[in-house]
Length: 219
Image 1: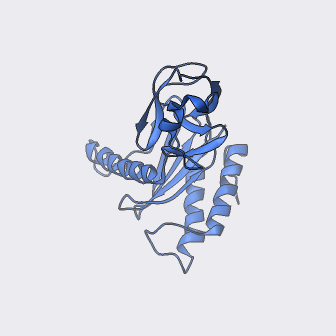
Image 2 (image 1 turned 60 degrees about the horizontal axis):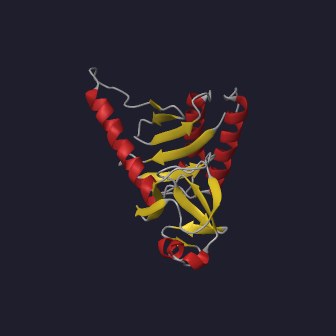
Image 3 (image 1 turned 60 degrees about the vertical axis):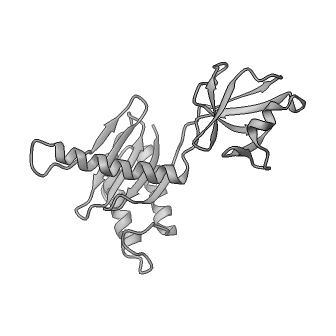
């Protein structure tokens, strides 16, 4: 079982905390000769496969590294333009690692805001007054669980569909937020959470949830 990530969204829809606990990565690395038999394009400031699939490499996968050098956006970490580098026959053979593109900080902010809007839409579509909004979304590979407090703060957990004890985990995260963010004299409401004790206790709670699947009395 696995808990993938945790998001905390304020009542205005702003992302104030995000932690990736476990991100399964389907990656494929292969050495290519010239010419490259995949078609690459730039999409959202990343170099991705637009045509051609082979050996675990899929359309939509992004270039993650070239010859062991990590990629940052459209360039390698040492400053080489990826598209131009791969056009040059003298750079071959070349080892390229592909995988799902990592979400940028801006993308995470945008997705948190979008979920906040979907949550509000869910409440408005309800045939009954006082709907709680979206509490769970399910896909074939993960479930999104959401708990909204009375003050409008949303705690969101992405987990393996088979992971148990998420409701208890959400309440535990709220307790950690109350103890180590709200009671911190240096923390301002609705602002990003930057507190080492909050981080430590959250990670501990996630470990307990993954191992035991729930929280017992006194945890």
